[in-house]
Image 1: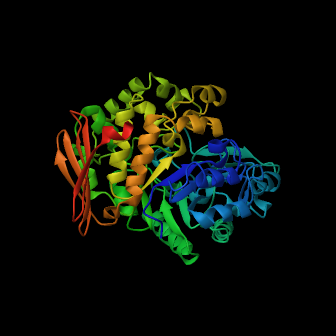
Image 2 (image 1 turned 60 degrees about the vertical axis):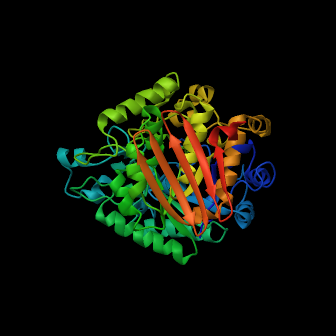
Image 3 (image 1 turned 90 degrees about the horizontal axis):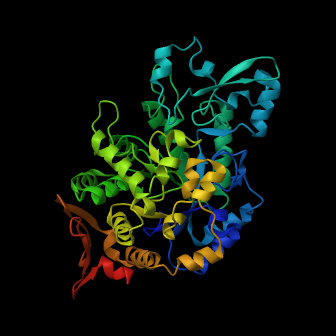
Length: 490
């Protein structure tokens, strides 16, 4: 089972400027005792594709520029280690797809990839195409000419460099089996099912989070469990979908939490946050920032389903992020950048809060007191600001929050009061036994309380958003200790 301690999300090379061994040294050196585990973002060949490793040419190989499977084993011996099983797609540069380009339907790998014809053998109507849910604008099909003289429409949910896998075919099953086995042999004990909501396509549906998708997640999760690994479903969708998915896998992400915390801080109102924490899945990972943008769809309405926030509140949330970041986020979001996301705002969480040290620490405190195991992204750990230089170089919106660090930057960042305060907060979350007990949330308007209790041990976060007063109250059988959140910054 995953430790109930704060985990790090990071790329091996972008946090250290080096490799997997350097990351292990960082965790055992300057960050010794801080994290119980690490989500190691794609380390596959190559780490620097069009989507920073989420478009693997070889999902079963470690990029030799940052290490080997032995290095992965070493890291996994000391820490909970999470890796991404990229369920939905593989790179167009993969040897399998190159063979398809050369041989067309005669390729031994033809059945690994999904075409429009596979799902719509009798053709697809305009209405059926319009019904398909896609995270980015435009068609989800890319016509590609093969050397057999034919042009085939391949399913490309994300980009034309990410060709969707036919997960129902024997080739698709064997491909993912091979990666799962490789993980289990190298001390990876947690699998993040990346983009799993898109894996199953069916004519006449929106091809996203279908009943068959739930069944598929059941089977994939059971398969990983048999190999000794837990599974985490990575799905951006309506909040009710997350509640349902949580029943089918070991854990889900609480992607509604980041926008709800921002909303509470922007409006000084905790109502939506309190409502969500009363019903949110308990078997979850919590985040504020990740390698992707700040999810918006998870808290908002979808179709005829009301959201935790209404459309006007979502609009205010997005515009406030843009204002707080001096429009830097606007330059990295939507049509302004090449990776057009319909459901995310690309910005560091620190910049989304206008670089307010107190508000940022308060957001982390709420995250740590919410149900679930907290994860902290490497950029968020060091309170990094938007990397506009990297964005200008790559024109990839999410690069605004995917900085390249090194030892000097880390050393300097560790002296910042906000980073020191965050490290103190992580220590509290990791060491208080009450966080293994029962959770209770209460409040309305500008105040809320998040409380944990196990036996005689209790710990509570009390927040007044209007006055910006936040207190951590610890109770044991002998004494009560009250710490003002602002004291952690001093």
